[in-house]
Length: 235
Image (cartoon, rainbow, N blue to C red; front, top):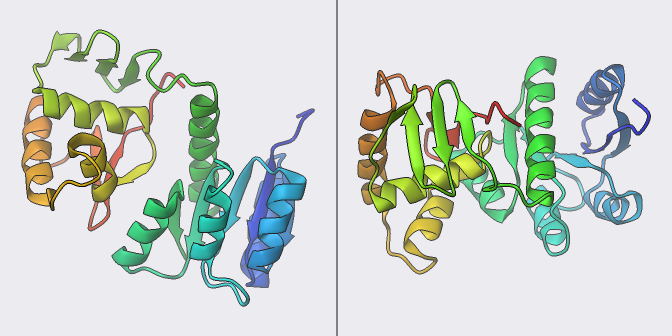
């Protein structure tokens, strides 16, 4: 790998930091590490890493504040890695602009898969191609420009709202999109609590797309947080 992908790790637990750094270097990535939030913010500006792995429980600056500061000027992919398991924490981090959230403990395979997804999504968004070509995954095809949805090449009729939900999730495939993010996109930033309406629409969408709605393949539920669309196989 001539131009190595640079990963900035902001993690104050040395054993976890060392585990991630060793795993990444073994896969050909370059790593920069720090245990402090403020230094992490400074390193992001000076070193311009390709992706950030961020612990929330830092000794000097809460990880949520790190996300806030970085999202004021950069769209670098951020994967939160934290022992905080409360749904509220996950929702807050994602709504602030984190791309994904991994709960400790975790394995090397999960870490690498999440990093690959975040990097692909970041490259896609940077290239401005989120809606430029059809989304494809496991027999599902969404043609954004033609507003056409097919499953196994058979057309599926979605209402305008249903299509807006599905296309939004597909454009961010592989990432968890929070309930509030979806609601804001579909019904506007000042919409009332539309969680119930969203759930009803999602149930209808799954009946139309999934062979077994009780075990969905295309749109996965992150309980208490939001929905994650299966990753686009064409990326």
